[in-house]
Every structure is written in structure tokens, then in C-alpha cells.
Image (cartoon, rainbow, N blue to C red; front, top):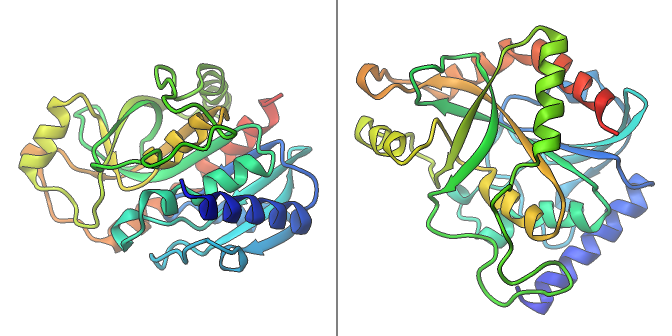
Length: 275
């Protein structure tokens, strides 16, 4: 990390603190098609991410690009509905930029959400999956280059990247809502093309159950900075390699739209339980 990158992160963090007010008790990063909770939330203040020096404009049309401060279940929550992806040409430090800003702005815990392909036989469209671990298959990562020791160690431990306590709370929230929350290993790929049947078979053999084009760089950055995380994914494409069928972004967005109501209920229940 260059000194200029560190300066931009710190500047953006002060920007959020100034415009959004008190630090959040929880941050939720919203994945593609999962931004319905913004409309259902009591928004107090909002910041356009393009107003933050150093932040790259989100490339995919489904990622709006704001940080919203809201009151949810009696807690101060920040909702992030814009994301930067490697497939748009962003470098790892750019995909992890907002995560680092959130950490430096005082986020005590972060929930990452996302739309994924479900490769394992036990997964189908519309399933919610709690991430228990990940495989970084992007070929790169946000810790490359000089380390900024004030943010975290040169070689951060990733043995429990996804907080067992937060994962347990999310499972409890799902049970209370009557929602089945499955568990799986997330493999992060660069994209933007979806995988071939042969690639899905390879990823399954590596030990992954779901596949997506975000999350891993963000999680690595948060863990590096000592902030606990959990990740909740929605299977929007049942990509079983032996019965693979064509899928479009429109199909994925349709599945996500149908999942908004249970997703919002589960997230609200989770927020109410976090202490």
C-alpha cells in the first residue's frame, strides 16, 4: 500500500464520519439485487461513494454506489449498496477500498452479502448460504505490496476469517425467521464470464460449494484490519455442472427480487441480536 493510498483511505473515512455522523454498530454490504432493504430502512443520511476521493465508480448497473446511515432495530447501521469489482478492471486495493474506509471509520463488524452460483448438489436457486470459509481464486489479493503496519500485520492469520460468533448469530436469526440457512465454502473468481461446466467441476473438487465475483478481497482486508465479518449469500444460479443450463443476468436479478422479503426479515432479526 502506497502512502497516497493510505492517505485517501483515511480521508474518505473522515468524510463518512463527517457526513454520516456517529460510527455504526454494524455495516451491511449489499450484493447484486439485494438492495431492497435500503427502501425498507429508515435512512438518516447518505453519501455517494463517487464523492469519496480515491473511490472507483462501481461499474455494474445493479450497484448504485451509496453508503446510507439508518436506524434499524434500534441500532445504528450503515448500508453500502455500491461495490467495485475486479472484472471492471479494478485492482485489489480498489475492490477493498471501501472496506478499509469502513474499518477506519469505526465499523466494529461487517456483514457481506452477495448473489452466487450454487455448484453443490444440495443447493438450488433461492437458497441462502452462510459462508464458513473461502478460496481466493482471483490470482491476486489486497495485501500485495508494502504493508501499512498501523492497519494490520504483514501476515494476517486467516484460520477463522468468518467470525464464529457472527455466524452463530446469523444462524439463530434464520431459525427465528423460519428460514433454512445452509452453509458452504465460497470461491472468489474474477469474472465477468460465468464458468464452464469443466470449471465448475474443478471448483467443486477444490472444496467450494458456491462461486462469486466479490467478497474475498473485502474479507481479507477487513480481517487484516482486525474487524470481524460474516457473509450471507443468495444462490441465484444453480450451476450443477452435469445439468448446466444457460443463465442471464436478468434471470439472476429475478431470483434476487423474489428473495427480498425473507432476506430483509433475516437481516433485521440478525441486527436485533447483535450486541
